[in-house]
Amino acid sequence: MRLGKKISNLEQLVCKNYRWIHATRISLAFLITFVVIRFFKLDGASYALITMLIVMGPQPYWGNVFSRALQRTGGTVLGALSGLVALYLEMHSFSLMLLWCAVMMFIAGYLTLGKHPYMALLIGATLAVVSCAPPNDMESALTRSGYVLAGSLLAMLYTSIYPQRAYTDLRIKFSESLGKINTLYSQYFSPRIPERPNLDDQLKNELDAVIKLRNYITPASNESNLKPQVFESLQTLHRNLLATMSLMIDAYWSSRESHLLIESEPALNGLHQLIPQALESLQNKLCMGISNNQISGELRQKAHDLKELVLKSLDGKITETPFYAYVWLSLEMLRQLTELNDQLHAALYHCGHRHLFKNDKFPDEK
Image 1 (tube, helix red, strand yellow):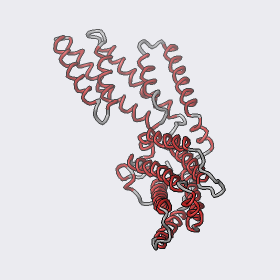
Image 2 (cartoon, rainbow, N blue to C red):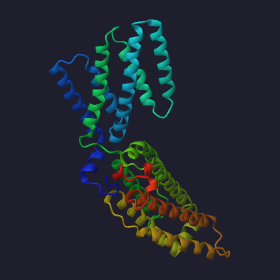
Image 3 (tube, rainbow, N blue to C red):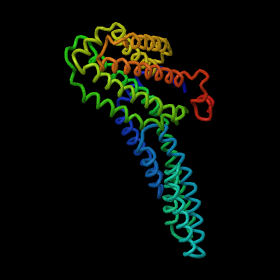
Image 4 (cartoon, rainbow, N blue to C red):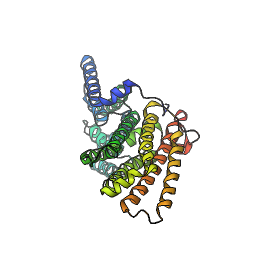
């Protein structure tokens, strides 16, 4: 899996219509499995259907389904073994069976608050299914366990057919968000606009969209082998970038005097061209597979120029507080853009950055 490859038009179409595709996949999987069950007259095979829907239903992404299927399979095996032990104990002592079930349910309940809650939940659920088989009917118990395992395997099979990948969708939505930030930046800081635009609702909606990207971190990490901390760091920078821009907007439009002062400073006018270029470069890096990292040097040079502007302005000639606030926030935004660019470049093209990956292994070394 090449993490920085260009995202195709088909992948973008899948991302745009992921709910329709997910619903269609589940519908076809149910129909095909149901027809097979009816055709071969498999008694009790409804456990396979139920398991398949539970594994596939909540999340459409391969990173989620594969992880849930492995947990369900492991939980099913342990639960089935516990159920068989319970049925064996029932042949000798019903009280002993109850004690065994109570202990296993206690362990399952305790583990549900641990690292693999789904597996723990399935241990209890499968124990309940198997132990409710008729006494001395080991064959029925084994059959139920087999159907549950078959359902997990079917879920992985159906999902593996042109799978929806959270990693790809995260890149697309990340790029779309940066494009929206670019548009808002151009609208707020355009010298042709005499008054502050009323776009606060759009800013709030974009912040909500950025926060929702957290839902992609776990499956995207499973699919790409990148550590979850890499995605969390990128999202933090993404969110901080938007927050910094919001503060810049307040400083830019705080008063007419400070607004005119900012517009008259050549170094800041150049900033209004560089930041949109940087955001567009990040979009290209995310979706177009363009690994050019030239923008990083330009951002660092502009930050150096702004620091010199601050030193020159400290002679008392400029007394507008919003001006200094705007310059400081601009420096902060340049720092965030530089760091975001460097982290994205390292994650997507990982030249020697083994520390970003789980077990310090590149994706092709899994």
